Amino acid sequence: KQEVTQIPAALSVPEGENLVLNCSFTDSAIYNLQWFRQDPGKGLTSLLLIQSSQREQTSGRLNASLDKSSGRSTLYIAASQPGDSATYLCAVNSGYSTLTFGKGTMLLVSP
Amino acid sequence: NAGVTQTPKFQVLKTGQSMTLQCAQDMNHEYMSWYRQDPGMGLRLIHYSVGAGITDQGEVPNGYNVSRSTTEDFPLRLLSAAPSQTSVYFCASSPGTGILDGYTFGSGTRLTVV
Image (cartoon, rainbow over all chains, first blue to last red; front, top):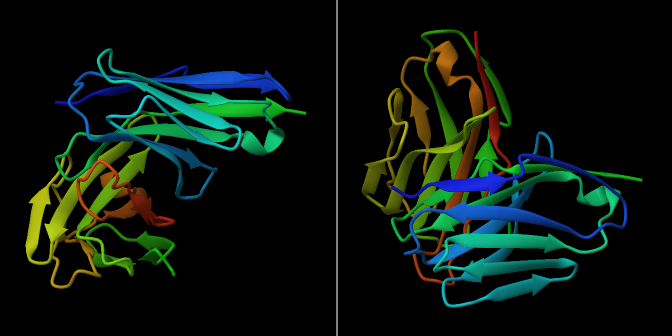
């Protein structure tokens, strides 16, 4: 059974810092991995999807990396802003028609 | 293009009542699924469907029923609501399980059972 862990559970940084969110998974046989953002009381917004054959995927200030063999992904946020404050969720698609989620990292960026 | 639409956004039920949470997608996606999100538990899969007429159970299916008569719609039925079903429910869809296929989520239904 696939298990996904996200570290840290919460993170507080001043504006402008570069930061890294971590995601690990137990079964390396994955199709892809998706990073989502969730604002309080809202739904999930997809940020990046990284295929199993890719090492990196970039969108603006966000960069996701994937090391399938070691079961790890990182989400790098450059030059953080208060608007980046949200919960970030990592979800793994192992090809069983569903996603397995980590419990998320709650990020607070202070002005 | 509306994506995944969930109704209602909020609902309060009394214990023992039944109701249906609606989910519709307009992207012609084959795969649809229902998750519940609880504090400290993350998102957990309730039921999922890989196409019209095909459904299967997820991690926490007890107390819920689903059917998929069309590609577009995937309603979730609570048969006899219990306080333990107080949660936020999310519906999601995906084209399939190709390596390029990501999931799109609805905005959620916040359910309180009293």
